[in-house]
Each structure stands twice: as structure tokens, then as C-alpha cells.
Image (cartoon, rainbow, N blue to C red; front, side, top):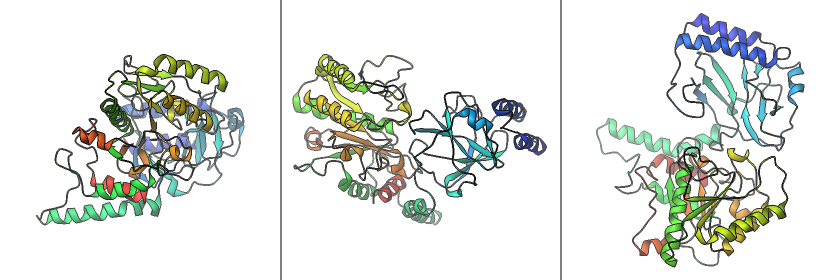
Length: 441
């Protein structure tokens, strides 16, 4: 894009008075920017990610970690549009007043910009000052401009920054640097990845050693024959957990009837088209059933909800092999946390019916729940049969996830079986495992 056009668009942003013209002014500037973008050519519009397919997207060109924040005070939108001191401000977009964050609005040239605000959203003014650099990202917009974004959470995939993040990445960095030197010299080099058909990386042992003392079953009296399946992302980890639980149950009982998976009516366990969860955008999921759960922002009577759940179990328990729980929901429920006692009643009632429990802690595990343990399952004494983890285990730099089976390794091994949900890159990355080990220790 011509530099003069970029400067022209930037000048329009800088001159915008959000206190008087509000969203309408933003829409005009956005339309002008879109026109400039069309003339310059859109960037990577064929990528279908978080933005709608076909939409030009910003490219992150610099970053320094991500910050998790809490304790927000919401302001009504009408107060924000009348607020006169907008310079050097960052504002947050919230789903409701229950302190569950959704998205951060951006700052451009020290001025807050409202990106299509909606009437049901609330905002929180973080501060008057320029945000600390360790918590920002620099993105390159399709128009050619650069913007600074204060990133919070990002689905809990990144929660380290600065020296702490560097410490996590350092062992793997040095490992890869030695590999590069060996390869440049024409020598044999250590592997960066071991495809699962060939073996496992040496780094796997260190990862498992670091994981074992943090498992949510330390109070179990018996010695656990646990095992972990490593995957790349959360959806595959959930599939792996279900896979192992069903295999062990069928081998142990000989009962092949209980193969259904029960999911919360508002749950999310991966891309809806192929994963377990409440949404079914492409086809009906014949392998799952939905049980009633609390809904974000909707008042409920606990006794009434438990009665519906009990009726669900009476009707379907004999066909359910595994029930999935999210101790803290993700985007499907705006980060809603289960009422602790209610969740314990749910899991206890399912266990009484012989149903295996899998706690999907892809979002809330790894201590992000703030309860002092690696898994929320342990802090709340849920005693699941399997637990899933992911996201921040790779430090925000490497994709890594997994499912830990509490007991059943010997049952599987005795039949010459393992997890069937496996693939070339399941636990293959040395750097991901080295980083994960540093996160755990």
C-alpha cells in the first residue's frame, strides 16, 4: 500500500472524537480503511481462523507475553460514550456483569477506539497510562498500519511473559541451537521431533516425571496404574481420554452397550463440527447426549436443575460410558465457574450409576483456577477417572495437550492395547515437551 494512503487512514483515526461521534465515527473510518484495503489487496483472506473466512486479518509481528486479570468494575456504555478523557486509555469488552472477560478493545495513537460496540456489552477502563509493554502485542493490520493491543487470556493458552517465559524456553532453545550447529557441520544431530511410528523423544521421560507428583489423585490409597496420552490441542486430548476410558470399561466389564458420551448442554470440547460439545452445526452427533447445566446469565433453581439431571440419568445411564465436565467453562459459557457443591453432586450422581467421569481442564487446569493445585479436580475433590490438560502447558509457544487416565494402564497393556486416538505428532515435539517440563517444575 502507498505510504501516503496509510498516513491518511492513520490521521483519520487520530482525529476521531469518540466522545462526540462514538461508533458512527468509527464505522466511517472503518469503511474508509476497508476501501483502502481493497485497493491495496487483502492479506491472507483464505485463512479460516478466529475471524470470518475471507476477512483480511492482522498479523502479530511483535509480542511479549499475555496478562491474566480479574476484579473488573463494569461501566455502562452510555457513560463511556460521554467520557471526556479518552486519551491513553484501554477499554475492555465484557460479556456481562459477572466479571468474565471476552475481548479487549484496542488503542491507536494513544486514543481508544470502539470497534462496533453492542448495547449488551459493558466496558472497563483499565488505566489512564500507557499499558506496560510486557502485556502488549503489536499487530500489522491489512491496511498496513500497526496497532498495539493489550491481550488478556487468549483462551488461557498464554500466561507467561518476559524473563519467566524466557526461562521456560531456554532449555529447548539451547537444545535446538546445538542441533543447528551439528547440522551445519554435517554431523549427526539430535532430533527435534520423533514421529510416533518410530518411537518417543528422550524429553518425554522428564515431562512425565514432572507431571506425576501433580496429578489430582495424590490422596488415593492404592498405587495408580495411570497413563497419559499426549496430543496437540484440547479436542484431541478429550477424544483420547474418552477413548481410554471406554476401552478400559469394555475390557473390564465385557459390556459393550455403554458407549455414549454425555456432555453439558452448553459445553465446548473442541471444534463443534467434529468434537464433543453442546453445538452441532453440521449434523446430529449420534454418539453423545446432552445433560442440563446452569447457563451463564440465567437464574436457576438448584433443586429444579438437580431434578432434571436425575431424570436424565434415570433415562440414559445404562447407555452412557463417559460423562464430560468442564469445572470452568470456556467461551461457550463466558468463563462461568460451576457452583462447587452442585458440581460435586453431579459427578457423585453419575458415579453412582457406574458412569466414568472425564474433567476437561484444558481451560482451567495448570493452576489457572487459583486454588493452589495443578488441577481444579483435586482442589474440589472431584476424583475424576480421567483429566485433560492443554493450552499453557506449552508456554504459549508450542501446541501440546494431554489426557491422564487415573487407572487402567495395566488393563490396556494386558490386552496389548493403547490409546487409539494417536497420530504422527502425538507427543513428538522435543521442544514442546521440554517447555512443558519447565512449566510443571
